[in-house]
Image 1 (cartoon, rainbow, N blue to C red):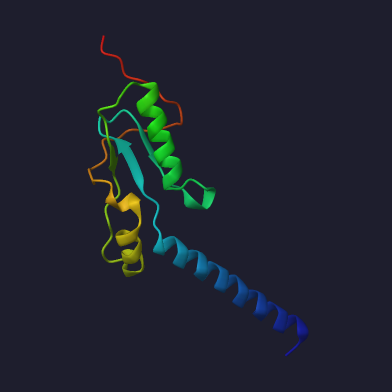
Image 2: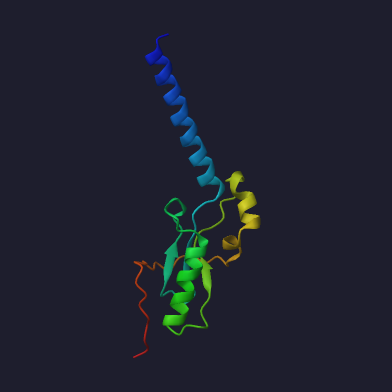
Length: 119
């Protein structure tokens, strides 16, 4: 074997290892979508971009304060996937999975809080 072939094999193994680890991390802690119980606000985790559950909680708090919506609560729109055995520990230990589940209402959240007014 030549040095070039050995390097190529090593790079391939490294790339496969990194891809495998990213996949395990992603499968172990799946992204989750949420919305407000009144259906006027929604957001999703994108963990590889740093948008985790704490970002969702902060956005929901801002929505409740800015829109004077103290009676609304957070609902989860992502079901637990019981086939994903690697996620089971996350289902048991992470607070995002303790949020009550409800089918999504179809809210598209673009980062701008728009309060609904009764007129």
